[in-house]
Length: 430
Image (cartoon, rainbow, N blue to C red):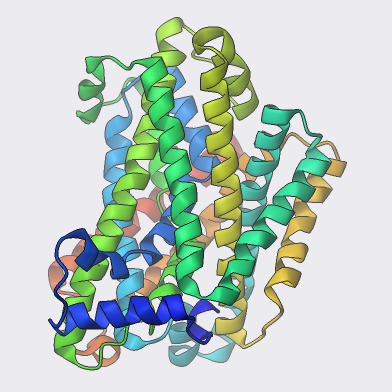
């Protein structure tokens, strides 16, 4: 795990600056003061702009225009609270969520948790890996098989940055997030959404299908693997020996979460708005997969729009696949104490994608199926997170307030209920 490695010179300087700010010894102001604390939430935020989000947002915008923008906004606010609680657990306890589960719960339950978390992590990684592979095919005409090989090499390269500490990896992921954001700035400039997008911020529906799509967006709010990972990224990252320092660290950590998740939310809203202005406005409301979306952009907005879309999808797939592999390593090592080299784990998790490609299965269909599998893991990550962060024996004086606890359980109940509804609709064709 990243947090278990010896600190590089860059990491040491980051920690030194952060401690100076916490202890009020720093002369820095503004962004320079905040910078040492930024990073973990940016890594986690990648999961919220993965290829699965591309598919859902584009479909929603193409079918219903700006109608569901408010759903993305609401989902993003929920995700902020959940990711903050995950990072808070790591800071206060010095342990990640799987480690706390291992400490608190009976061994048979821990092993069950490990198995389901591994399945969820691999299903998530499959979707993200296929997204990058598909992007290489769309941009350069590279066959899916060789696209998968190149995606694997790129992911290996990013993961290798861990040898130089946590800061270079955080910076690399932040660059990928920046590339996705820039690509969608280009998309918005070319598609020119109208002022009617403001109406999309008013909660409303148009029939049962819009409700179903809204459920899909909200139901995909929580990514279980980054709940496990985020708590690992923050544990022991910045030392805070006493309660006063931990309170200050949590405030800076909250800013990290709010900034990173706000960027992810704006990217998701941009996806939907660009799809609304491009596809819905021209009567092409039947865009159902990423390939069709890419191919339709060129005649409507020109090749630059299609390239921007493809680059965003590629950056999303590579970065989210990297984060998925990191999550899987945390899950294995923390739940049951097993540890394998990260490159070997990356190699193993690539295999399902190669099977899908060799069998000639539709990548978009497999991506959708992986999201269904992902739904099963949401309660298993959310419930212990809320239980532990509200427990004064575990968290001490930094346990959640009643307001935060009640809000968390309302959000958890809503998300779990929506995912059960989605599973019912998907599996039984309701």
